[in-house]
Length: 143
Image 1 (tube, rainbow, N blue to C red):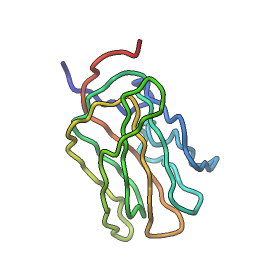
Image 2: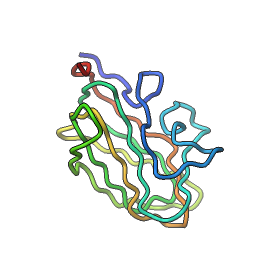
Image 3: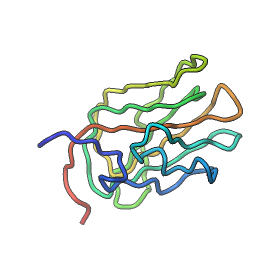
């Protein structure tokens, strides 16, 4: 099986929920493949978004590019609907003024149909997620 970039709208992935939306920086920007676009929170934490793959995938490596995110939790689900999430990864990120946070995570037990990203706390009143990249393989289509 070949490894592929799983978190792109062009691959069929979709952001199906976000707790905030700014019309200039909507949640779809996270997976559009464009390095110049991003999603921004609209204050107050926690904030979250859910990515749906529309298939069963096995994720081996995640890269999250963000700004001002302090604590990030990632939950996964293998259900056909976005339910029964289990905690998968929790990270405290480092903030460097004027630089994107480029967090690379080598994933263990990365089988999922949905990923829920929860920004628990931030370094400022607002945070942004510029992209989520998930490298892995498609295990099967949802039937």
